[in-house]
Length: 194
Image 1 (tube, helix red, strand yellow):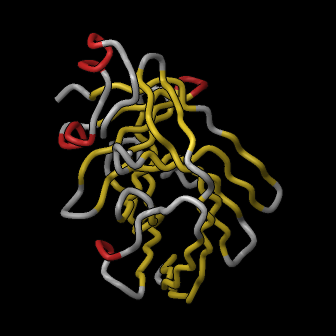
Image 2 (image 1 turned 45 degrees about the vertical axis):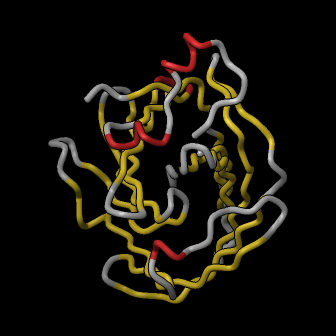
């Protein structure tokens, strides 16, 4: 599973505007509730990256670092004590600095080459990003512009993401892999309490 891992609101009542997260709220965290009682919390991490913590119930289980809120930089499990389990760490090193990776543009594609390191073993990989046409998503009264993204990996796996340009983040909606097809339904959005 790769939990992956957009600012101005569309028309919404003024009471809803105060409650709907903006990109500025990434400093404290933006929380998505996921079907089944799971959650994902996004926060800023460095100059051009985000950190995503995926929770099953109240327990954090995975940390993902995303360049520009989209491109995988690191995936690592979180153990029962809340510490990072470095034995599970995978890193992604791109041919350019993370802050220079392109932001999604509706109707375009981008091929990213990177070195994937798992279990201390590096391998060269390529992933193809296909950016769909702009649409919109809503979480209760909070509405955002969105760009659907298909990511195809060299091993044949496919992730489907939703990019929210107003928040500068993407979330995983589907993961297709050998022997599996997982879907994720994001139900609500809120500002994480500091």
